[in-house]
Image (cartoon, rainbow, N blue to C red):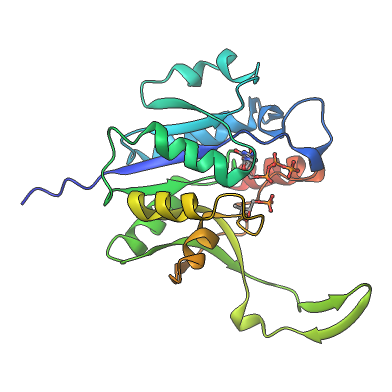
Length: 230
Ligand SMILES: Nc1ccn([C@@H]2O[C@H](COP(=O)(O)OP(=O)(O)OP(=O)(O)O)[C@@H](O)[C@H]2O)c(=O)n1
Ligand SMILES: C[C@](O)(CO)[C@H](O)COP(=O)(O)O
């Protein structure tokens, strides 16, 4: 039988970038000659696995239509939501006519421009036979403290704590149901947490430390450094 399962990418890009404190959302800041989001999308396109990439942007976004990549034949634009989870759900709804429930969706932050095609293939190869799916994640290089106010109340066992990265890879149907049922829950800061609320246990796949999220001003220089090393 021909395997008709497809891979889709959803790129939430409708955040305002409060912590970056720049004159525009951080995905439109310049990094090594392109905007952050152009790097991200060119890398997803380079992976050459996606049926389409749904980029979720704010409806008042003046920057997105000016980027040539917004017209790429594999790119579909979807309207942003209040929180990241709402934006991801909007991206899923935009591809609902073409996607089937068993198709895989990789959700990747627009703000993670150092993702590599190799990372994407490694995640897919690691999870394609899994029932639930999972995420790229990183172990902590530091000792982790539990704190109340400014007082340390404990030291966590690092073998049980991983940092969540993206892409996060789930079946279309499971992810859509999980995000719909989690709507309005502020604890849903990534896609895996919506599936966890359903009682599921997404897997972790070890990612790379250079797959950083541009969050604060100093992250741009760090991303540039990582890109030069890649
Ligand atoms: N309503 C939202 C909020 C966030 N995002 C996207 O989700 C990704 C990760 O979120 P984060 O780093 O928190 O981005 P911002 O919300 O823009 O940042 P901040 O929290 O500093 O405002 C980003 O690519 C961001 O554009 C989104 O699509 N829709
Ligand atoms: C999805 C994410 O990038 C995983 O680390 C993260 O949860 C985004 O949200 P935040 O605003 O940086 O908490």
